[in-house]
Image (cartoon, rainbow over all chains, first blue to last red; front, side):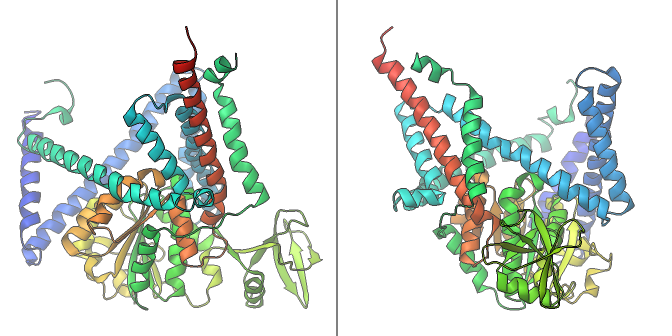
Length: 207
Length: 342
């Protein structure tokens, strides 16, 4: 029962969505029904967001209660979370909320993202080796694209951006198309398995 | 000895090189010329096909983590639209995307030439300056009679002259326009929870899905800009600035798929190759790839002193540093493999 009901709901919802996708969207009853379904999905998504928030807070309160050297991070998270949430709920157009967004959240998030440059450089130095013919091709292509995407590439040799654009437009795009088609076929097969109740791992727990 | 040192090179040395490569050109202000690539030219030509009074939907599907690459696209795109009388409806599929649109309109630095600074001051707008000859910090300029007073941190201020070498700017795109009216030229419908469901909703019924704007919480039917928008087909184009799911893929599949509406996108450099097939199949009408794409778009639209164009010099040096270390690593590998006997 615990598994049959979710599998039944999944089956019915999926079949409805598939059938309605192929029906004439201009028919009023189809429009109305689809709007209703979409509203339901929005409501469920909003609850999922709420669930995520509670889960995050629960995990971090638990970590804080255990009290060790890493508890400070949980404390920072909880305090920041509550400060931003409360000030946003009171008035999300207030100067305090905007100040926190502009002067704390934006610089902190950007800093986290920018750290990538440092780690990429370090990882590339250690791992990017021309060990085989294929790896050498990849290495040369990477050099050309890296130089072609910045102005200094054209300053070194005018043809570098042209070769870089060609690599992006043909070999990279066609390889990506192949990956996408493969992934799409895989997604169709997994979706069918989920709809038909063959794949149940998304329900969690044991068989 | 040297080989062993290089083989076990401390990563902090690499970090140091990278930091110098980024910080030095930022401080010196060195600039490399940026030339639009064919991909960006195609993007710009799609925009140029838009006519005055057309309405576009701008979806900010990113957050501050990727703002360094994507926020310049938002600024340049909105400025292009406002300059050419193209109406913009903004929304977000990411919670903080909406806030970043607000930042673009009210907070972000928009650099302007000295002449424009004088013109805006005469209209009573707040203009700021960073003067290298003075403190190098932000100062507000006030015109008192025939004198320009530079004010820092609520001081009385000092009289100074407006040099051509100094950097002048206003805060937010709104500050450089007199005639942009909320609800007429621009409307924000904010963050919408639900991702692709929201897109599907807009495809079928814009008003039913969106209902109200964020600023006044009034029905979108009350605003001239959206009064005649029934569904996604009524927009001339959709521009999604995207750094992951939900974003470009969902707009192409669920937006362009059923309606054929033109979808344009700006993405981070690292994710751009993933979306190239959509571009070649024409499901995507234009793509800006990373900071380079943003800088090229700034160059194509004559955007003054854009952040992306400024960022291309540090990025150039950063790429050179990465290439140098890859070559160094391979040099060590080849030397060890072919020239050093056990």
